[in-house]
Amino acid sequence: MAETSPQNRAGERPATGPTRREVYEARVRRRSNRIALISTVSVVLAIVVLVPLAPGWDAVQRAFFNGRVFAATFPGLISAFLLNVMIFAWSAPLIAVTGLAIALCRDARAPALFPLRLFGVAYTDIFRGLPVVLVIYIIGFGVPGLGLPRPWNSPYIWGTLALVLVYSAYVAEVIRSGIDSIHQSQRSAAASLGLSDRDTMRFVVLPQAIRNVVPANMNLFIALQKDVALLSFIGPVEIFRQAGVFKSLYANFTPYVGAALIFLALTIPATRYSDYLMNKQNRART
Amino acid sequence: MKLFATTALAMTFAASSALAMGHGACAAGKTLTDGTLTIATGNPAYYPWVMNDAPESGEGFEAAVAYAIADKMGFDANDVTWVRTSFDEAIQPGAKNFDFNMQQYSITPEREEMVDFSLPYYTSAMAVLTTQSVIEAGAEATLASLKGLKWGAVATTTALPILNNLIQPESDPLLYNDNADVNAAIMAGQIDAALYDLPTALYLSAVVVEGGALLGQFPPAQSERPDQFGLLMEEGNPLKECVDAAISELTESGELAAIEAKWLAESTGVPVIE
Image (cartoon, rainbow over all chains, first blue to last red; front, side, top):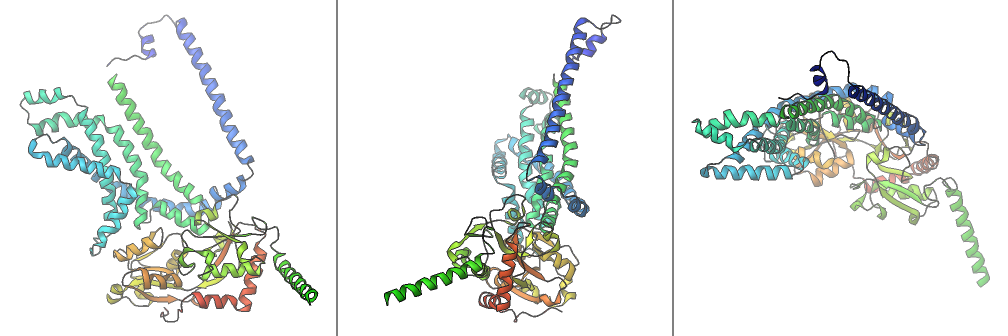
């Protein structure tokens, strides 16, 4: 792995002090930082000063940034958010496993397994093409409507299934792209070492493929984090529904802002982490 | 003779316009469009509040009340225009596209801080909608029995706080976007019962929900804060006093009760829950 950062090059030249080029670069860097700071501060100032000057600001502030409503509803939102976390926690592993299985179906190469391959294609085509809400409605109300007894008709079970179906289709495609990114020569090499097809997949292809698609899958899980809220359509009172209840109770949109803050508190670190992984991977490749 | 007729006609005209002036004076210049009263309702507007989703016909309880209020305020039926809004549009900050909004808004002190409500035009009993099979399974019209049921409600209505205060169910209620979703959950057996205002519940049990039944009702007199419907207006709307005057006039003259008797089904057949 070749390190190419300027500091390292400087480190290779001992004890002669900074070169003229380095002095120049440092000056340019300081100047850009200064400009960036000034422009950021002036944009923030402009927003902070100008927006409240708008004639409707008072009304908007009362409806969206109402401290009294915020204080009254925030604890309720936090406890509702626990349900989101729970649904996410049991959906995510199921999605990962199902997604992997579907990806392997699509990669089945033996002629006898062609139906499996067809199934994989149909599955990803259908569930990536359908709106999540529709799948949640059809499965969440439809399947229990067939006459299942309680507790087997619970919206939690069937809502989770809907999420798993849709998201595993996305995850399957991501994993498949990872599998495709492993060059054919590696499979040939594995075969020449006497590995079976199965072992080639398990010990050669998948370990590399999955590592390659970790950042892309992180993105999907951040999206899932938010789509868990769609389960509220079929009954569960998670944070978004709870915010809606508060909204209607107080005739005020502030609870949604509260819910957004709670979401951000989780998704921003997750996004940053996924960026970090992606950068790390890019560095490893160059 | 002709002169006499003309004079008489002129006098009648003058008298009637004076009368109209007397009524309309309050609302003059306070409406969105001068000379027109813009009323909002839901999209769609539900039976029995508005028949056939056509408020212009004046058929259905709320449509009829709207035209009666408009009349008392000095607006001709032709001077009434209808617009449609969701609940969220009604409470959004900024200019409104209606003079008042009428879609079974329950008056609550919390909402009153953000918007204005008129005097109530209807006080609703709450009713328990369930299915025949739940009743056969042993559900009764007693609080003890109701506590044990699995409940559902429409999330944006005041049915939820009433449910939590009055019945205090043992398991958390499931909440839905609208009536249709609650009904789907009842039919899928995911919930045993749902709480609605009585007119809506009567309609749903009779027409929409297969095997639907009303277990009982909570009459308004029984609750500390009965569910009262008011017209929703932008906060500080100067029209409020005119609307309130019209509604109290309708209430005192008994016209409101007559409209209610005409459009809302008789509710005495539903057992009262103690």
